[in-house]
Length: 200
Image (cartoon, rainbow, N blue to C red; front, side, top):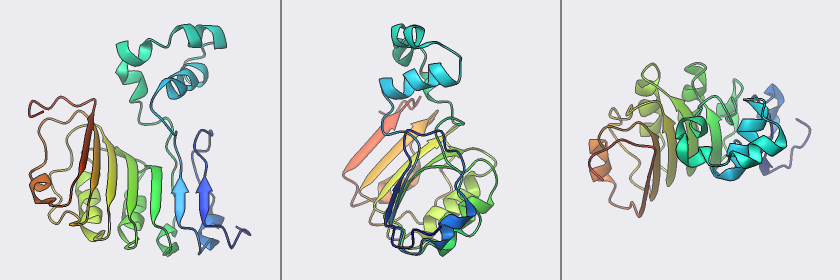
């Protein structure tokens, strides 16, 4: 909380799951990166080590799980960070990556009030919070990049998608592509991971 000049906070690859309340004092913070830098072998190895109790040798020799068992890599409780109350006060934020929103609607509302956001990456979207998340996204008119991990296709309720969105990543059991994607005239990158969509 004393790093008042801090502009970038990168805690990717750590075991931090909740940010302290004092982060809201960082009024100059522009970029917040959490979770893991990639979804490849690095994540899979750490997951085996820390979640399933594998030793280093077993983890390294079991890397094929990334291809054989994608559900391990899709554990939504692993790798995200929870924002504290009051995060809406971080008006300088342009980037938030790796935020977990499944532990209450308050954090979604906080994100929805960060009108200056350009890049957003969240996980933990489900049928209980998808309506509020879609409402929050509709408020982020400056958003250019959006990455979402969801339990299923829960993004149909975005009424006004950010018109400046250029990059969209959807990860989860997506049945069909949301209709609002047709409105994204500036979209240049679309990435689908672990989906079951028959449209692509």
